[in-house]
Amino acid sequence: MFKNIINNRIIRNLTTQPELSKLTKRKWKSVVGLEVHAQISTESKLFSGSQTAFGAPLNSAVSYFDASIPGTLPVLNRKCVEYGVKTALALKCCLNEISMFDRKHYFYADLPAGYQITQQRSALANNGKITFPVLVPGKKVYYKTARLLQLQLEQDSGKSLHDDILKRSLIDLNRAGLPLIEFVFAPDLETGEEAASLVKELILILRKLKTCSCKMEEGALRVDANISIHQEGDPYGMRTEVKNIGSVRNIAHAITYEINRQLALVTQGNSVTNETRAWDAENKRTISMRDKEVLQDYRFMPEPNLPPLRISMAETSNDGLVSVHQITNELPELPEETRTKLKDTYKLNNETAIILVNEPVLLDYFFSIINSLPAISNKTITNFLINDLLAFCNKANIDLNQCNITENHLKDIFKYLHAEKINLLAAKSLVEIVHNNPDTDIETLIIKHDLEQISDPVAIEELCKKVIEKLPKAVQQYQKGKSKVLYALVGAVAELSNNKANMKSVVTCLEKLLKVK
Image (cartoon, rainbow, N blue to C red):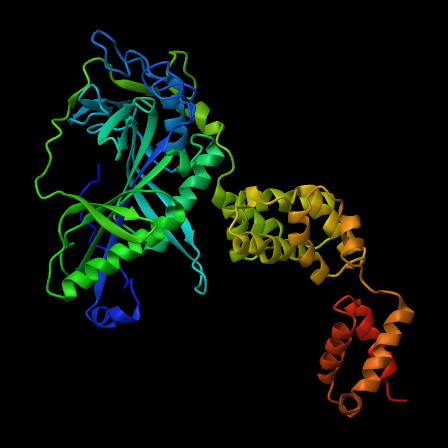
């Protein structure tokens, strides 16, 4: 239920693609607003006792109420209200002491009652905000704030299963009645990257609160994007809605594509149609689903079988209402607080702190390693986790959770690195080796793959003498005062030793051997 609210703020230019360069000179602006549906992590549904576990057999998690059997009544799940309040507090919302439930009427086969119970007129909370970092490769990190217009509780509908071979559709009501929090964000965003960053931050918050699993592949988090373009100073243009975008990465792709599609339409003299579109991830394009030229009348009316929802704002309450004060005291450390701690306590730079918080597995590794191995510098740990471990996972196209490298593997690698048994290049090589051999201990892998660092003074001196003999011209230049030539000599020793020589010892040895007497 996107609120068509006019935002008079000037929005910066979005696209810089070459084919749209003429349009950018005309100062076209893009506007993006999001609606997010998050499934609340409770064991039972919003108004019935049916289970919510993903993957249950078809139509096995359906109560009489979920199937809309006459005479059945909704019973509000208290835990859903508590989780809704907790989420609203984390997003700095104004909670409403009294909120109402409404019926939203529309006909669809997977909605057996012919209406959805939601909160349209008086929601659980309003007027929140979320401030989040936007991290785009090759660009400077910046922070963005999006207003949260409304946070409301509502029930989900069932699911239609279409059989193209038999030419028929079947209905699974397992999702019917699942508890949802709907987030209605103002159109404060400008790019696909900003939208993806907002959703990423929301996921981090919800997982920290444990109010939603945010497993998009299971439908626990669904994102709809409302996109329009207009020229600077003009009213907002006609918007399109892209429904049910299935991943954070696809949010950026889908919105960027749709902005460019609309820009291409208007520059060709065509107009944007008010329609609902879907994201085709395989072909990386949006496709039309249905037009929205005729405003649908949902015939909202108060839900007669549910009384007003009341929550307690008092510090002490014995009336059985959900206590806002108690939930406030239970709020965990949120992502931005963690970033601040990383910067203030551990002296990490802003970008490093953002990456660690954005990857909770890396963050857990970081805290575990610094607590177990305090002698290793924070910078060494973060550089390895981000530049080597995370980079390997990205290159292998796997999530960190799918990587076979464990916390203990990492600790062992850092122990051998700190003891100078291996160097950084060997440690980097071990990432892929350990992933492919997770049951073999680190010491065995080091020996098997000949990764031990050469630190023996005699061996180091022999390598240095060979390089000095091989590069007399460089030696002369260094001895005449060109100190930077030393780097070339060190590099030659590294190459000769197959990158296994202890570079600190090599530098010391070369300086000693090349010292002019």
